[in-house]
Length: 447
Image (cartoon, rainbow, N blue to C red; front, side):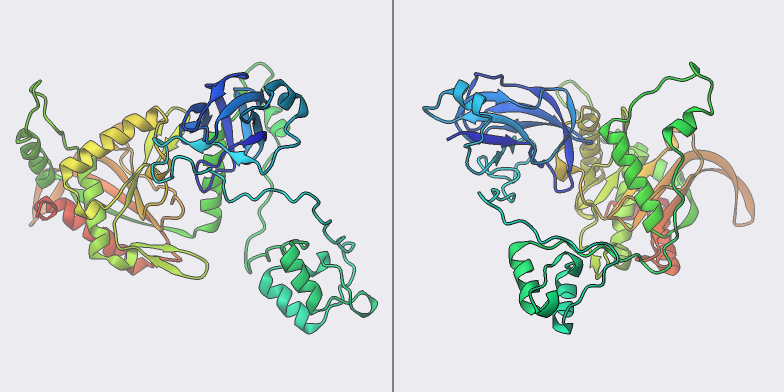
């Protein structure tokens, strides 16, 4: 029977993707495991595999198409013994449950080779029952107290449930029927108490009228820029940020770095096997600080606080058109050389958009370093679901006072942004103090 190929979900948060390229064309024979297309998400370009044998009868979404929703039909495959032309002409209407293409093993090694990426999407019923008609806006809804309680517990909107009790009253059996059949809409989310009313932004046309015609070029936002904009607005609107700053003396760290790099073993080409950077020390120090102050190694959710046992540090990497945050896992157990080599690999693959979803999702905190651009200090926006992010400035010579004497030292300013729902002021101060102690006493990171 014909097989419908759907746009796969290549990550848990993916809603849309760009169909960058069809590797296989109409009329090509395919077998399970063949790469059939390349899908571009906001973070990476990933290969997609076929999960069945057959012939590509019809491609419905041409390559280069942007913002294709997950689970949209993108191609039809004729099964064994079927006429590809006939299947293409039928549009796949006779097809059974649709199947999603699978991400290539290189993109998602945990997934079995033949497992559909969107296997959770059930086939539509042959004759779905129509949902009950919603009551007109503002019309009073009559329901029994038990029905109201059940609907509230199930998150259902009573206005979209058809009542079968006296005079159309909604009773217990109506709510249970709506739950079983999916014939009711979810209740709208209530506005959070005290949430500020946000003024709408200016329209595109209003903004463009402020500039003389011909004085600018319009460059459409790509999916990465749209998602960065959405997530940053979400972070600033929903996370109560506050900031803590300290200056760190790098004198001992720079000496330790020089000694570590000088002692690095060399390969056959007499190149060092690693070259540790100041940022590698920063990643290690933040990871160890979170272990020293475990109450700050958390993630806030609406109902619980997730207390993490490992220090998984995201590191902001600038790439063309935006940025991505690969995550160094289990920082507390890794040496500086391992962190250095891992970050070099992540940065190279990030710029080529070849990171796997599991390499940039999650994490318990993050580092954003603009020191290489000469930035003295700044405050970073928290990247959900993290509760903290460390903004790192440049190392520069400054005059300091030590034991009553003025001296010159290389200093680095850092600012910790914290989610006040999860990390209170005193706790944040404890965390950044632990970080400062580790940076200024780097030997403690080598033990």
